[in-house]
Image (cartoon, rainbow, N blue to C red; front, side):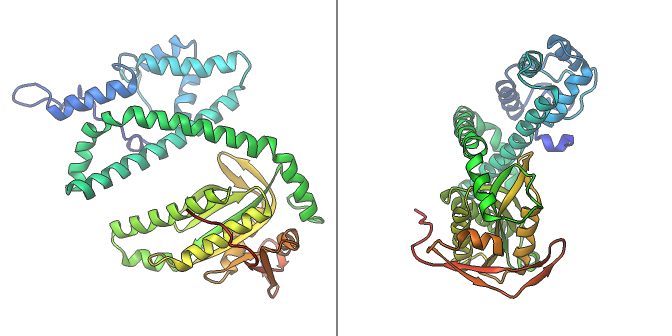
Length: 371
């Protein structure tokens, strides 16, 4: 991550920050300085070697953690850190020294925090700017300047919601990835007998992809704001449906979402709901959807393995507005009256050879109900 990715506030002490005639700081710079001091927990008074030494750590080890958090490189003479930076570094160091975490685990956990919070704050800032442009009738540039005055009223509430959400998500993750994992593996053994490719992988999940049709051609004809609204609408609708269905949105890449669910039935319900939602949407195009039940490897917030690859291949074979699954996933759903399974002609798929796609359709019941 480079310096531009940090979205740091300008340093009021930097050259050019003061009014050229009077040498005093502008009101905008004063507000920026006050916000920075509040967010960083104090004035920047420490250099990197001072912070590392205060935490009882070599500079090399400290830099590993800072890079994991996504911080830019600072020179030896840069006064870039506060006492809170030192306290945070000490917290991670203590976890390693007391044997709670290995150094490798500490860096991995720290990188997760850095990457997720970086994406989160960019998302939040852009949402606030967009709202000001719409509600206050100002330009994008003016809204970004006003952000410094708007944020102080939101910081405490956003921080409280962040901690609240993290605790809820951590609890759900423990249940999903720990407590209920064994039951999922047992179901995977029953549903995918004879498939050895994913046998060593530790988690059983329904893995799905939803891919907007004709997104590339649409994006070429849209201006920046229209495309941003389309992408946001797509992400919001996917996130809502996947959440209501008890699944997890792993990631969004442009016109495609990757999601998981804990059972084949939950994955099927989510997949059908996604296909229906985009078929009925008056703005978004239809979507191709595919879902496969099998084992996966979960690392760095992403998922890996043949199950993921097969789901991606099936997505490209699906017709707009439909859901495809493979024959082994179909066998796991065969006795469920909520679903209709229609075998399709076999296909030769790169990396998998001949597979037997099955069209998944709604059977009995209403499916997912969105409030």
